[in-house]
Image 1 (cartoon, rainbow, N blue to C red):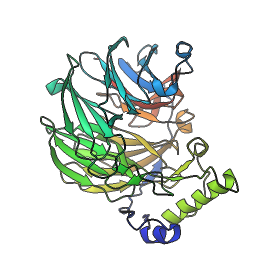
Image 2: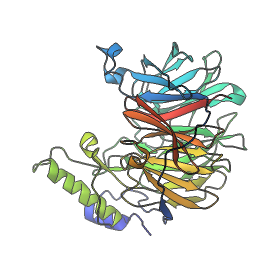
Image 3: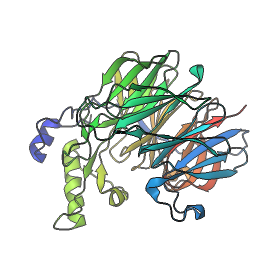
Length: 432
């Protein structure tokens, strides 16, 4: 059984007395390692995978552009492998979502612009965040009401009063219909709850105030349930972890599978140099979780100047708030990034980006599986999405490679050798 040890952390690291909720629920560990194979036959699939890359500046058309001003949206034809792309004026490109009428909303994170594009990637409309706010990651299409919902975060939240917003757009006219509060700090990923007329949305729950050695100062991470018609808050499920509640997907039984994020800062100005700074953060992590590390640290710590804390994938009942935690080991679950369910296969899967590991929960068997990117033929993995109506999911490397796997047996059935331009998330729209 693994828990955050709050008392040990506070005494050994000298943290502020106001740090809340470092204790984790007991972790469920039922791990097997899934070894995928390559499909021997062919499978007919028709649809499009949408890939958003944060870095468009390496493309020949992007000369003179700055990374913080644009991103690249790509479409991948699943049947033919044909890829098309366009550079759009969206900072920190995060994900693309189907927004009705064949159109796509390209969503940025921590930026002031999003863009609606058509199926041929022509820009239809660029939307600007209102003063004091930034777009905060994802969005969703409500087909029943023909509207697209886009979350925003307060530009510099200082307290729980600095809640985020939802902008609501008519998906046909692309006109802004209304703006409402999200009910929490930094709304990120909204999803319709199957079998209800409700929406669930993750809230990061962080404020912008330093709290060393942690990267994020987390005060109220929560899953918020809203009325899908009015977007009025119906209930909150506040989590007690000192970690942001970030990404999730919801299975057909209304179970929200979520990942969390928290990290320890590496002091680049340490007087004894980089290696000494890494050693300090590494020891803090081991003290925090009360374990001795026996695996290499992720190579990405040099890029980010942080060590991400291993955290469970969690399951929250959207009707009761009951929670279960799934953990396969410290080496496997650093930096939860993307989550997808697959209704046909009866699974939910989370990508742990800094561990390059896919964690899969089979609900009927209550089985937990861990699969490494290298076993799937990827150098790393970051984006994931369901191919709706099939037992397949798509996975992408952060810079190169997209694969489709059978979620029932982890068989790789498609492989696309394409650039993904610092991809964060995938989405897909199936045809037929």
